[in-house]
Image (cartoon, rainbow over all chains, first blue to last red; front, side, top):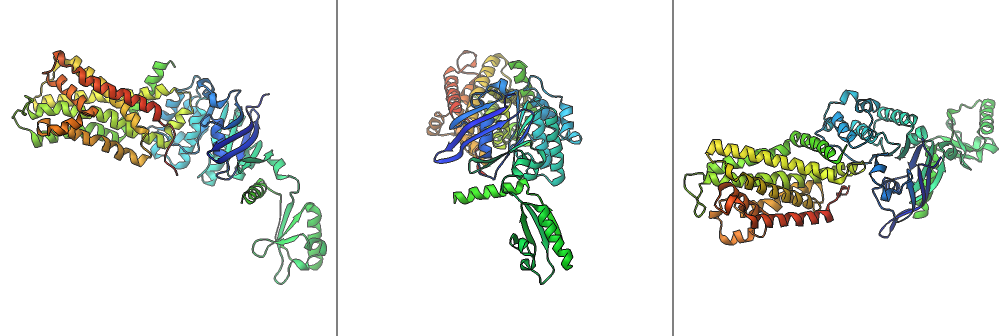
Length: 307
Length: 258
């Protein structure tokens, strides 16, 4: 199968500033592809080039087998776009907004079904101006879906959502993949990528610094599990057995942390020691490295090398 | 949908947004009616205006229709299209298969329909409240003049959006560019009261020419049938200039930063 999106050596400069510095991307059909990066990393610039809103400086870009910089209306029949910031006519109702957009497409989805899909059934006949921020965002998603696109761009779709609204949005997005859509999702919420994405690319300083499945990225070379615990008052890292003391660092407040490539052995050593000595280990916890850890480390490295 | 039915589809929704927006209805519909009533109260008398051969009531009907048409086209488009651009509505529309010309057709169609409604409304008020007769025999001149003026001021309003940097600037820039011309061109103050030097200044701008053409079409007295071809030509030239400037400077994406 051809990739839905294929990017080679993409560059974009604004005057002397090079916002995107030669990136490669491949997005396969029926995938959720998460594009992560801090603000100002080149995320929105890249997405807007893929959506056909911006011209690139150089490089090759193919989206649904067309160059988005030269794409026509036929191509627009096949994509849906949720912009990072956009409002809708506050005077129209939710249903009217969808009817307006449905008229732009050759084979639109059913308006009522789409209202249900994004969970706005109760609000279908309310004016857009009366919706909450989260509800307006769901309308944005509905408007992007109304043309029944093959490929959907979602630029930070859950920014400003409360946790339960975010959960519901994730369900909607996961359902879309099940409908056979390809989804290009930009976000700066790591849980969002971890929860939804089949593939992840992290952009920092205009370059892709890591790419792969969330699992691959979390288990990158050198990544280790973290064991954290507290010792009773008066005891410190120096009281631990020699093999453990070396790998122990002070965490937040009075917490100690052990970075362990082999967490089973380290935990065995630690708990064996504690039982033998009758030492109480408070707040004992073992954590797998998360996508967030990888992300923070990579973006920190980029910022350091830039300054 | 074919191009024409798509334009009609767009127009229907543009009508909904227009009539449901209290600000657009107030400024475009209620304002001109208010002006007509107030000016008649303040300046109205049975005396004929010097050199014009009409009384004050008769003078203000075509004057306020001129104002209403410019308000429904130039002012309405400059403000609403700028605000929609800053909301990201135009940018979102460009992400769909909607052809650009359909977007413009819907908005311009809305302005034209509102212009014709205002013509009917103000003519009826003039007839009923002030006994100003409706020039049925010059209807072709009235409609052609209104059409040329409305089209030209639509182009100028859309062109102006390219020079309005933000949502907050939309109303001040639009109003400052048009209100002085209403005063200078005899729309607010009968031109018999305006020094001729001022009228010469107004002659450099389209409001005066549109008003001259519409005044003759309404009260008669010019060439046969009420057509003022020279004035209409100047208005059309302004419209074409607006069209060309608009083609060059119109923006689809929000311009204000942050």
